[in-house]
Image (cartoon, rainbow, N blue to C red; front, top):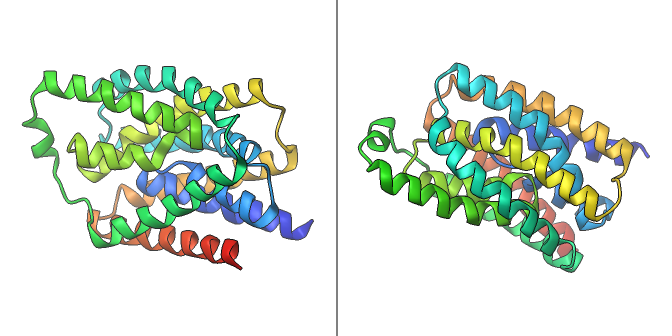
Length: 255
């Protein structure tokens, strides 16, 4: 029992730090840790991750908003597309084998960590302002559809893909990408959690409550730190944390 709560707290804090630092979803940490270390059903683990993301993303979004690091206009456009396809992804996730979802989350955690270390995001707000508004709207809709499906499938707003798309496809600088990501995830995580709960059963209550509290605390501290840090530091710290967590869970699966 003590070991279970230790995993809940560690996974929650890790997820919160990932959310506050880089706009990543709780699924990047909570889902694979619950699946790998405690043998949770993958669908239940994603439900817990989604619930944990709601408050964590909300408090992070508020902090980024206060620091003027959110693109609300394009964020709302993307949000609409994301919400619709979150339900679609959630349904498909309910009929996919546990091992498929668990392995996908674990490897994506590791690979995204390596990406941050090897190829950090160093674009600026000035580059974003030069982009054509119409093309940004179209891109936001298309990307929202993709992100929404991923949100429902692996949970918590599809944060891993969302950050990659906002920086690589839409050309956001890191802090605005993170702020916009957590703004969207506040709503997608809530929608995804309701969808998962409606399709399946209520997740383990002690795990749910513990993960929510730990994720909230981690996200608040990390968001405050991120808004005062340089992009180089954000990339490096986030990359190391994700790579280590991902590698550890891959090794556990192999052993």
